[in-house]
Length: 183
Length: 320
Image 1 (cartoon, rainbow over the protein chains, first blue to last red):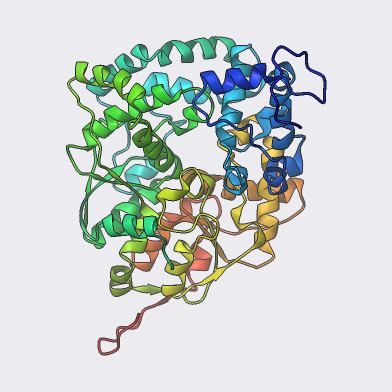
Image 2 (image 1 turned 135 degrees about the vertical axis):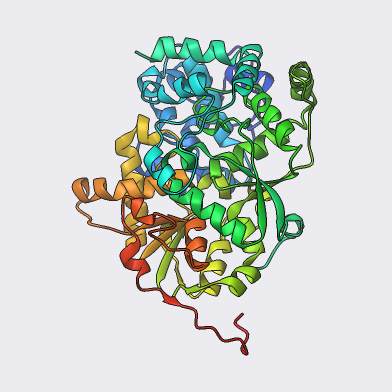
């Protein structure tokens, strides 16, 4: 793939279309990854690639071809284990984990991904209620071991946490997420 | 262990005793009290004073990696935590890879002026201020630093039992320049195990994720199990009697997957999985059952631990 820029060209599978790539680099805090050599080291050791359709090299190619919709609406990006094996092997140190999270963010913004993330609604729920991500607590065992039976945050902390997550819009984001992906 | 410059510098800053702030892990406190009690007893025996705060919130690692917290949102919550912790100590110790990784992410984000300018007014409004200059220390690194003391104080020898290690992705590779062991060929745990009399076992899928992939157990359970299976298959070829890990989430995954692997993949394994704190507590002589409740694990480690022999007191000879 030649690294020449042609703006506004409609995508066909062999020519680059920079609109999507450019928008990622402009809006997101990620280092430019145009210098991907397509060496495939990211795929070689990838545990998700061994067991599913997930393929980082293809994903980067799709980005450089401007193929946004395919990536955002597909299941592929949700297979990544975020394990960073690819990042540490990449000869260009491309921030692959960050890229996957960015693509997932776009998918969620487009209303996709709930079919996956609905299985983890417990995390944000617990966080909004208690400020801790605690599914349940083994009170008896804690008491048996001489530990405090419950872990709860002080009222002062809960108030401060609420104020912070309100001001950073996290509370709103989580509530919207729960409405969309929760029951 | 041969160290690079950055690893040497971090190792020097790790304290050998005295006050440290223990960053509370949600997973350990709620699901694995045996790890919590092991950490508390080990650190006390090793002359550390644990400082902690009930004002400390969750590290938000599961939210951050599920796209439910942006960098700004994560850093705002963590900046408040850091501001509180700063009043206690600059040495933060954590028993969990998730907490370790988000603590470092937040500390790095706070060096970004744009993020700092957004967060500082929030904190000042609540009566806090931005604090930096922390040493984020994983408890495995702390144990490595005080290994000479562990060897002096130990009551139980690991008696040659075969032990496989699993470090976890969030420790080795989320911030590879901020750990004291090599991210690609780590030897921290192997050194501890060997010096304490055990036999570290190497296996092909050492680097492989435990299968949790943060949320893969929930969102792609078949894929997650397949990865855990490949890890356990590789590991089992070398017949370890125990698996040691440094993250409660990895520990839970490697423990829980064995039942499913027996049912779905026809590979019957029953290898107990312990956290490094539990291993150190055993080595220091705490009773695995009455003091540490290690039999609360899904796969009971007590039968293996019965093989361990006590250290014979030899005051005239030096064990190194």
